[in-house]
Amino acid sequence: MTESLPSAQDRLNRLWDAHTTLEFAHKDPEGALATMTDNPQVIHVPTMCGGRGRAELLTFYSKHFLNQIPDDLEIVPLSRTIGERSLVDEFVVRFTHSAQMDWALPGFPPTHKRIELAMVVIIQFDGDKIASESIYYDQATILRQAGLLPDPKLPVLGAETARGLLEPLPLNPGRGSCRTYTASPRCPPGGWSQPASIAARDQDRARRPARPFGHSDDRVGARPRRPRPASGSPRAGIEIKNQCPN
Image 1 (cartoon, one colour):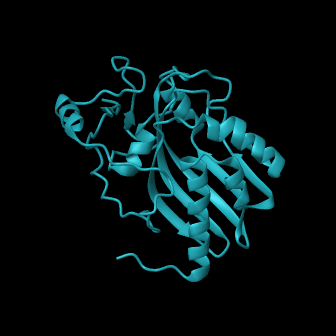
Image 2 (cartoon, rainbow, N blue to C red):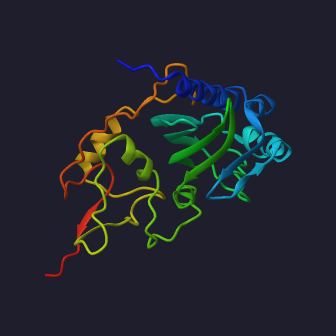
């Protein structure tokens, strides 16, 4: 059972839902701006795209963001934390890079690659209006999945970084450990070697259903996560190699 929010937090929650509905469902830049202060700020931190002030944001929303959202974009909510004047959203985004996307891959034509990434947005409010949005995500994982970061020696993962928040994939034990996660040249771009039994199992596993961000059925609060597998248990597409000296 979902607990009701205090009135002030509920107001922020509803305002943010209305703002994202105007963005992603209606792609309405003027409507989205109407939910914001007279001098708002939006920054996609990895690419420094966005705008300060209503004029800059109207240009950004109408020419470099809302008109470039892929038709198959899906957002899977993970958690939402609401304070007195701020809100933090954590979610997974999935889309196909089927169009020019200045906010995510500025300067690159469509690669038609499937992209999955984790995002966090920090929203600040001023009264009943949104004052700022700071959007954080790992730009390197987008480049890896888009085929724009081909060097397999770089310690950059692809869709695994998002999927690890949705299901208990193994974690890299860290620097100095005998186990490391390594990309296999036998796999396609973005792919990882894995035992055949796990590969067959994962092919049968249904993907987590997604819906547009700001859906009326969304609930506030963190979704409990399942326990992680024991250290050394290979899971879902990552090959764990023992590199201890003999």
